[in-house]
Length: 289
Image (cartoon, rainbow, N blue to C red; front, side):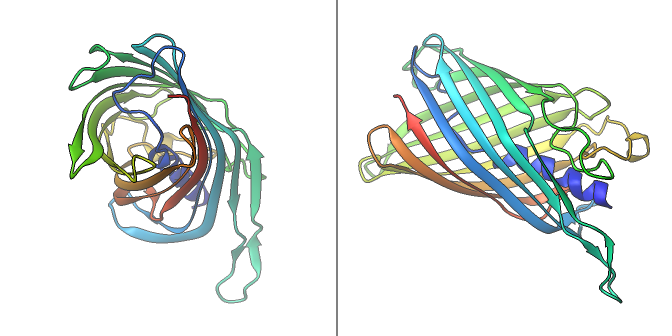
């Protein structure tokens, strides 16, 4: 059960990140940088049949640095680095005597780093920009922490996500707005199942573009071709064949022409083997554009 609780965290890490992105590469020499704190605390989860079951209260906190930099007007490099990741579990107590059966514990480490490259298939300024990206998931986190080795911030596998984005900007009731969509494929190693991913996003700028509001719908569908639970080691945090549909909302406020703050909330509306709870993100960003 403790292994199951731990593995649920991973899917929420992937669905909670709301940054710049989309089909728009950065201009040459320009950048977008964000420092954020993300967290989720949950005491129930979706089972492999899509139902919810209770679990030991578990939480994770990530302090992450995200950055995009324009190498050329059509090629952008992207990094998402959880510089500090805290994973904890509460005490497991007897329901009859309230005695501690298993003591709670925590680990504090670095998380898995994502390194990516985005290339604009269309020229800058196109009415419907289209880009393709490759993201490399580097297993830089801790694969075995705590007394039982089941507190982790990494699955220990190297994965690659190939994705295509398209979108457009327009005016809505006199305000700047945009919409975009993406689809991608996640190739995983070490017996983890491949995934098909897709999502849509809509955003609008208010008060002369000082306040940006956006919402995202994200989905991960497993190909269910990974190892079964019986073949995964007892120290693994992650389960194969996990999938979900999530909704996220974010607000970005520009305090100056380049510097601002952001806040977001995300959660799964459908899932298999993921946490049944919301996740939160607050951060500060600097937009060199």
